[in-house]
Length: 119
Length: 107
Image (cartoon, rainbow over all chains, first blue to last red; front, top):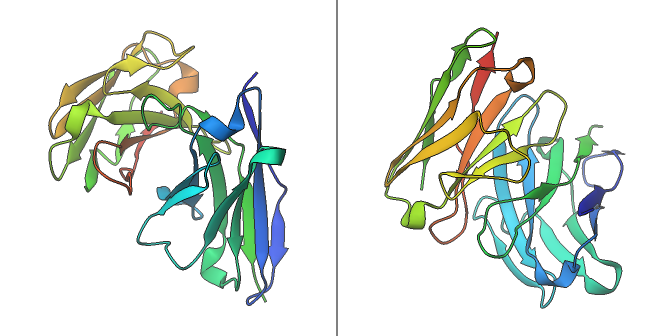
């Protein structure tokens, strides 16, 4: 079964750093793009960026470029989303999702990681 | 590309037909538009890709249509589990591959 398993909920303070993860299984992780999607409380979905684990080719939405870093580790089939200095406005649910390769919709989703940033 | 979904909320009853609209600010190449369903507290689920192709395991009461700038998701005979929020997403242009703001289908 193809799965994306995301890391658990995080509670952080403003200014903290954070890295959340998304581990793929049931398929060849390195050959499928992974996307990250933000959903702020009570709001819609926002496309943040994508990474191709095979060569770490990454594209960011202009809204998120410079605010987060997307990375991946082929050896552990894991993609990451990280912040160097969190803000309260980063509080949201973050989903990872797989792109099937023949097109760029998102066919498999993780369950999401809740990030809460509060002093 | 900006996607505008309408209506924002659709109030219907089980067994009704739902028609959701997604309009793009410019033509979407290759009909590269997807629809997702998000039930409360759940991750989104892919319903339709490339405008009209049902994803694996999606019931045939869900159908997608459209091209260019106008796309539609139709749900015939709403089942209780279909009351959720629906998002369209385009991936025909260069990234970012934007979402619409969502349509809530409520009882």
